[in-house]
Length: 336
Image 1 (cartoon, helix red, strand yellow):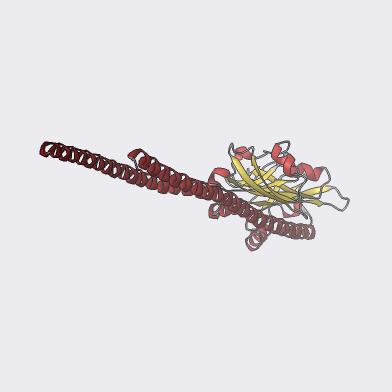
Image 2: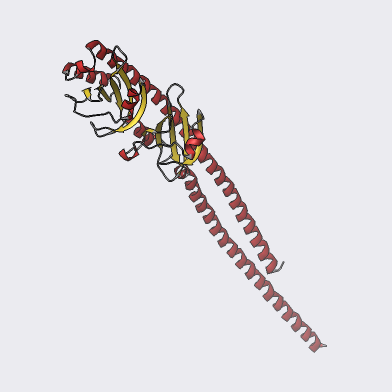
């Protein structure tokens, strides 16, 4: 077999092997990419379920606590009767440590604080501009959720409040329960589905109530009117990919609507973070394929060199045999 045929055969075998290896690795990597996205979707759905349970428990507890406070205020004679009452302040403080653990505030009909669990005496502030108080002025007895930047504690909080009414049904004040956002931060940091995991809670109109990493600048933000809202507002639950108003990156988002409260919860992770295992597999596969390719190129080059050497040896042997035959012929002619 000629050197050209041998070299073609060697190169063909090496090429087929490399293409086969590359094809197998590409199929594996595609499976890994799909699996990574599926794991992220499952993880965000589980986080959304956890957040749903937290939201339901939080608002149910807030309703029980605020109702208990309202009953005690009614027994004592109304908001004016507890203003400056240190014993009532101590009772609020003890109640908060045994229930919500956050902030309880009572305001009068002018939206001025008369009692707080964390501060005595109550500060001279005016909350008439708050949306929760405006809702009570409009006749709503229970107001679920509003994100605020607290004028008392200088924290971002979300709220639940109930109206206090006198015997004639007029607004006499309100009890507000304000919650910290620690749960949203802790659960996101503990999540294993990827860096940048975010938990969020919205009211039925799409206004942000609470969120991982929430800043005062995010208070009042809403997803109403966005593509994300149009795709999920009418569904009880779902998983989708979208860009939110809070980040520029595409995210895998799982959301759930609470049936007994006007609240929507959502958990999300950046697609880029979800694909981190895929990128690790891609780097590993690239290293393996590269190493195999280098080794195969070296072996191919060695095989071609040996084939070329063998071809040269055959050519030299052929020339030597020809020269020997010529010499034998010449000798026979001389003898003849």
